[in-house]
Structure formats: structure tokens, C-alpha cells
Length: 270
Length: 321
Image 1 (tube, rainbow over the protein chains, first blue to last red):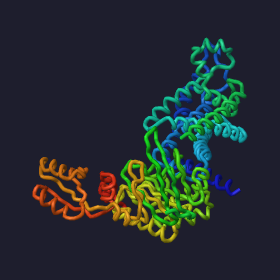
Image 2 (cartoon, one colour):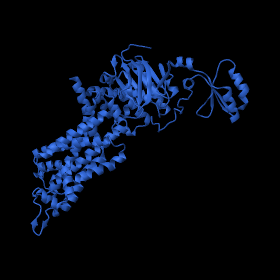
Image 3 (tube, each protein chain N blue to C red):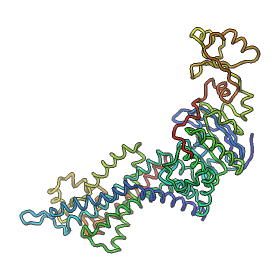
Image 4 (cartoon, rainbow over the protein chains, first blue to last red):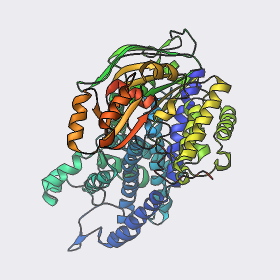
């Protein structure tokens, strides 16, 4: 029992430090607020009129939503992706500035150290995702509390998976400078290829979709796990799915387990 | 020195290699309960590796470490509760306040809220930082940071404290303060201390000294024992010209060239000094005779000088107000 208490305190301490640091980091907060504003208010409102493109009076896309509504869940995912993957910087920081050693000589088990850090990072990322939820009105989305709760649950799962992924990256990156470039080259392609800003129309057959888009792009979207995370959130927030609704939670769950276990494997080896 | 004490350390036949290069070789050491032991050696001697092993950060290739009754390899968690460490590189979170750093440390050692409050206040007072408890650590000077690290290492009331080069890069006042805290702790809390350093002046006050060079223990004893056993007076001289130097080296085969370009000759008994001065006295640019010190002990044992940077040279602004 007392051992359990000790470990619990250790986990809480490590989690708390991540959250405190994030709350004090102005730059990160500014990014977390400005990113959704730019994506929703500028890109979203700007492209809104073009979304249901009609060709000679024939409605091409049969998605019964505005572009803003369609984009909204994806912007939540974008904010989570940035914050989670940037979390690697905190891991590199601890390693480079020796803080990790001070934790490693404590009696806290290694997997608790990792879990505490990742839970902290996920909490922060979920928080940044939730900042986007506040803008729901702008996107003309009305949410009930159970929708919000379910969305937060999915967001937390996604954050946990991506934060673990960030930790795996951190183990392979030596410097902060390198990481900035690195993260952008990972986040944006994943985001763009997740059917976040354009739909693969589910009303079309696969043959039609491929006729509309080059096959390689469809392929990239379909193998991208982020696609299914975006799809899951769309399901909850605007009740629209492009894929089998069971896929989203399965992919998010799979990411959390696989990425956390590989991060743990990495961390134990060092 | 084989003391069977509760909080002492016994190291037996410890060896470790990194990528085939031997870093520590057959180290035997004993640290009695409540004593203060210094590991003296140049940079790269293997002191930090030894510290990492003692803190259970690194598993040695072979050998055994016992802390009291506990075997480090078998009960690393029990050992971790008993030890505190101050590393050579700073390891505070500079974006948190002094208090928050201590509170975090208390949490990872499983202290309750009440214990954390009590201990944090105690250790801050000990290192005279109570006035800075809510300041962000980034604003601290090097000396203040090091003092806070010592406070942090003491949060969970360890019975053994490891300090890896605790005064490197600090100004003389900060160094003096740190030594006085440590001395006080030894007296009041019976805290066992193991300190690594390459500053010979700093080890004189320790109970026992182990001299380590290239991963081997080359001598050990109390400062007094070491000096009387290995300490010799030494002539340091700078010959006027190359011919003198050659002649001098030929006349004293044990003479060794020192890092500063001078030549060191162990001063033997009898009228050696007279003979030396008679023959070379007029052909030297400089001459100096060193009394036995731990620096000459090291030189006599290894034929090399230990790192002789001036320890007092301030690296950063000394900020003890």
C-alpha cells in the first residue's frame, strides 16, 4: 500500500511538472491559440463558399456540411499533433540538461517515469485540442455535453498515442534545432494526407474516387492513421464518417498501445 | 578499513568498460559510516563512471557494491531511497521556482505533502536560499544553483550523499559555503559523503582519500598518510637553454617535463639539493621547491600533474548577495 502511494506521488509529480511547464510556456500557448484561428477563420471561412462545388448545376459532393464544419474536427487534430509531437522537445530538454538523471536515480520505476511524462504531454495536447472546441460556434457547430465528453476521450487517446510517438522521435534526435525542421516535415504531410482539408467523398465508389483523385493520393490518405482519428472526431462532432465508424477508435487505440510500448522499449534500453 | 556499518559503502573488485575501453579496473573501496571520502583524480580518470555506478544509473561489468547490508545489484530501489546525488552538470528545472524543484523531488521520493513542506523549508534554510524560494531558478547564479542542488539531494534525507565535482566552476565564496554546509551535515546528521574532485586543495579536509588515475586506484589513505608515504618535495625549475636541459635530464634520469614547460625533479635525501644547485644553480631561469602536498603525491605516483586549473577562477558571475 505504501509502495503504491509512493509510486502514485511520483507519477503525479512527473505529470504535474509537464502541465506546469506547458501552462507557463507562452510561446506554446500562443501557438495553440493562433493555429486554430488561422486555420478556421482564414482558411475555413475563405474556402467555405467553394466547398460544395457545383459543375453545371450538378452538385458534385454530397457532403451535407459546410467547409468550416468539415474542417473543424481536423483542426482539433492538427493542434493535438503539434503539441504532442513538440512534446519531444521536453524529453530532449530533460536529457540534455541532466534533469532526467535526477529522476532516474530516484526510486520511481522507469515505466512510471515514462508514463508520467506521456500523461502530462497528453493532458497538455488535449487541452490545446479543447481550445479549438471553444471555437465551435464560429464553425456553426452546436455540441451537447456528451458529444464534448466523447470527443475529449478520443482526443486524449490520440494525444497519448502521438505524445508517445514524439518520445520515440526524441530518442532519435540529438538536438533541438534539428527537431524543429524534423517535426514540421512530419506533422504537415500527415495532416494534409488525412482527408483533413479535402474529403474523399464516401458517396462515390472507390473507382470514382480514384478517377477524381490520383491513386497515390488516395493511397496515402488511406494508409495514414491520422485519417481515421480525424474521421472518428468528425463522427462525434458533426456526425459524418467517411470510413467505417469502428475504424477510428480502433486506430487510435492501436496507436496508443503500439507507440507507448515502443517508447517504453526505447526508454528501458537506455 | 572494513567497517560493517549501516550506511557505509563497500566496493569489491569493480570493473567497467565502455566499447572495449576499460574505464574502471578492479576498484576496491570502503567508505565507513558517517565519513567523508574524496575521490581525487584528473578529468577522465573514471570518477564520474564510478559515481554513476554507485547511483545505480549504470550496471558495472563486474564487481560488487554493498551499501550497508544492501547489495546494489539486487536491491537498487532500496538503495536509491538511501542515497542522494549532486551531479557535475546542473540538473534543476530552470523554469520552475526553487520551491517547485524541491517539491517535485519530494514527490518522486514519495514524500507526503506535509513532509515535503517541512523538508523543503529545512533544506532551503540550510543552503541559505529561503529568501529565494519562489524565484524561478533561471535567474539564479551558478553558486546558488549548486546550493539548491545540494538542498534537493537532501530532500528525502539520504544517509549517503554523492557529489560529483560539486565546486567546479564556482567562485571561491560559493566553494567555501558549500564545503561548510557539507561539514555541518557530517557533524549534525552523520551523513556519509563521497566526493569526486580534481582540485587537490579541496581534499585535505576529508577523512580518507582515494587517488584514481586511468580507471585504477593508485593510492589511498588519510591526507596525512598519503603525504608521509608518497609525498616528496620537488624541485621545479626552468633551464636557461636547451643544453642545460639536456644535461639536466641526463644527470637526473627521473626528472620529468611538466605541463608548464618546467622540469620536475624529486628531491632526494641528503645533499642532493646542494649538488643540484652547485651544478645547475647558475643556469636556471626559475627554481621553486614544492613542499609535500597531495599534488606532489599525485605527481610522484603517476609522473603527471593533476589538472591544475586555478580552482578559484570564476566562470560565471558570482552571485551570492
